[in-house]
Length: 87
Image 1 (cartoon, rainbow, N blue to C red):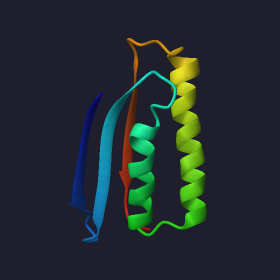
Image 2: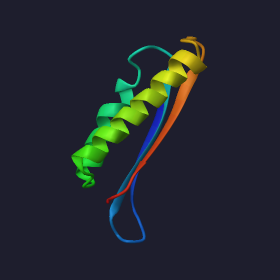
Image 3: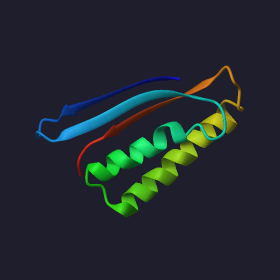
């Protein structure tokens, strides 16, 4: 698993967060990014309803990539990039 993350200030002076990670093609791999992503959304002031929607969409996209795209192949990874800015 390869990952990198960074925090920086936007032109508005508010902190932003981003992370890039390569997930293994196995069921449950989304947990390696989802908890941190959801925490960061909350820290950046996102509404609970929006966080729920993002969680649902991101989880579905990652699972689809692992199961349908990579066919659970151990030699393939799913690259995920997240970028969170304040609302």
